[in-house]
Image 1 (spheres, one colour):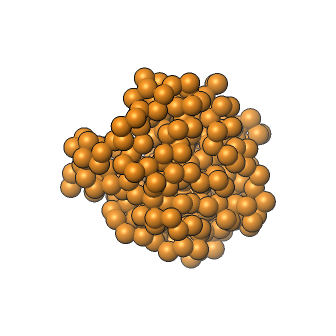
Image 2 (spheres, one colour; image 1 turned 90 degrees about the vertical axis):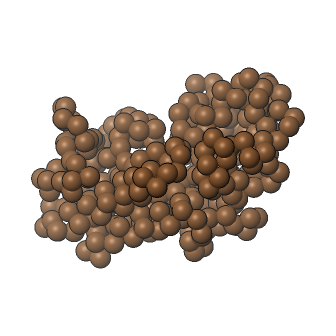
Image 3 (spheres, helix red, strand yellow; image 1 turned 180 degrees about the horizontal axis):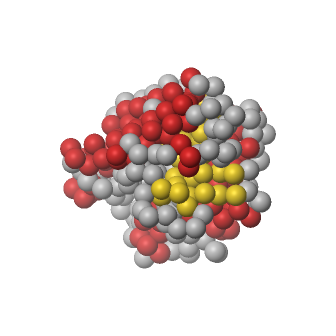
Amino acid sequence: MHIAITGASGFIGSHLVPFLTAGGHRVTRVVRRQPAAGEARWDPARGDLDPAVLRGVDAVVHLSGELISRGWTGAQRRRIRDSRVDSTRLLAETVADMPVDQRPRVLVSASGSNFYGDRGDDAVTEDSGPGEGFMAEVCTAWEAAADAARDAGVRVVHLRTGIVVAAQGGAFGRLLPLAKLGLLGKFGSGTQYWPWISVDDVVGLYAFAVTNEQVAGPLNGSAPNPVTNAELTRALTSALHRPMFPVPVPRLAPSIVLGPQLAGELLFSSIRLLPAKALELGYEFRHPALEPALRALLKR
């Protein structure tokens, strides 16, 4: 297949591109800077995307968006939302306006597990509705921005991804230095569920969504065995042969650094995410359980 990817240089994109090319697919990176070989340019902030970039492309994977781990000032909130919603709408409307025989057949757009908000101990599947909070609102608008493509008959998938477990990079990569120093403890009570997925499986799910025509709508990007924050912390420190810091991280500490809402939604909310659709459609997880995943991934 010929696959166009936005955000190809980001954490997930940098793993997905070599995976797809190794599988025999042709990848075009859609970038905001001056393009090099194998790249094409767009400017989502200006609403600039030449349909020729997508002409003859079989699939689009949309990964670009402002990082959410910075302080949530009013301006940063707008950047977080607009970078996702405006770019997705631009792609969807461009695809929808193209002749049917020239446009991509599928648009796979990133989304987040924060779509569901804080759900406590309740199991969450793709049939669960949206939750409350800033990121839940962002994810809802983000997914709705693809409606033009969906309404035009293009298959659209929203991959609602949790914490991606890898040896470096991403949100999980920020925990590793603390764990290696023996300074990582559970956050608060530690009973909140942290949805996780290995980097191999998030890449595998993106490829699955691109190539499997049965996949449409939301697709939960999580391993089938959810864990709490305390369980994840214990497994990580054990895999690194380091002690788990005995004192829990109080809510106040990250709230001072990140802001109370960001800390609350990203660190202290509970999302017991289950990949019901992926399992139903036959996706086989390479790392279904956390401890073996950590042993395999941290050796790289």
